[in-house]
Image (cartoon, rainbow, N blue to C red):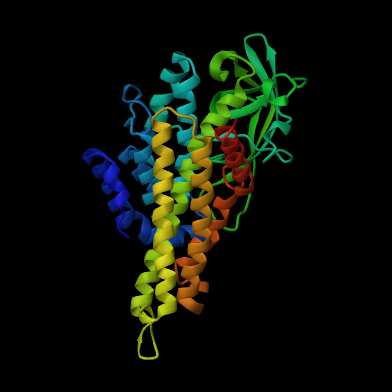
Length: 390
């Protein structure tokens, strides 16, 4: 499907996105369904993503990255997800954590970690959710207590992407359990798995879709973390760090949704032109044409809204409103489009012989990833009420 919104990128940025598109067409699409059905980690594809520089896409050049703006990153994630949504997920928390380190951490932490992250040798995960703290993130119970030059972390995190293969984790804790409101007592730490005794990987959680990338529990039992790894070097700032970082995650999820919806649409329109009923292609039937028109229009609207949110992040603005709208709209569009694509395929669409069944299983994850869409509506409404205040 044509992507006119690429015109907002520079020529060099368009070339990078085009190179990613070629990689997806040549290397990802031919193997994605088989890997996904086996729930197999894409080792070879990860190595190729390293060569393309994707793990350093938004990391500054002085640390070995490409220093791309988020508007370009959004286009890259869309292309990767057009091939296989899980690849966009592997990049997501890695990019979020690298941005957090770049923005809030000391130069010592940046110079020590970002080069290896840019090369993809050390990939990252984000530890926020707990068994009883998902949408209500202030209800986390994980603690961090100062012990000399270190902090001791205790608690369990759930639904950690890159939990097995990742080596660097941003972990949200409470350093003051009595703070009112609770977010004022929250702090984030950069935890390096290889050098942190007391940090262990728990079970891998089986999922309906979003396969090939691990989603795990992580346990922290007196996990000793240097005080220098406290993000922002000051306690009580963790809520700010997480909320500003999760905006990137919402742009990523919205971009993934656009990519999956695009793939479903492209498969549907090809099938509609090839499949014949009553002596003609089903694409000639008005009911099918109406579906295709709705799909294409909503996908392009989702794409433009997502790029707008990314551009605002590039401009240094808070994008909780725009990111929330992009994530809400794009993911609902993906859910709707993948179902319509399955309907166009008819009975074949419900079989594992067609890619559309994979798209249909992947889409629901994005309704809840990086904050449920019900939470997005609250975020949007609260920002609108502020915007249209007195």
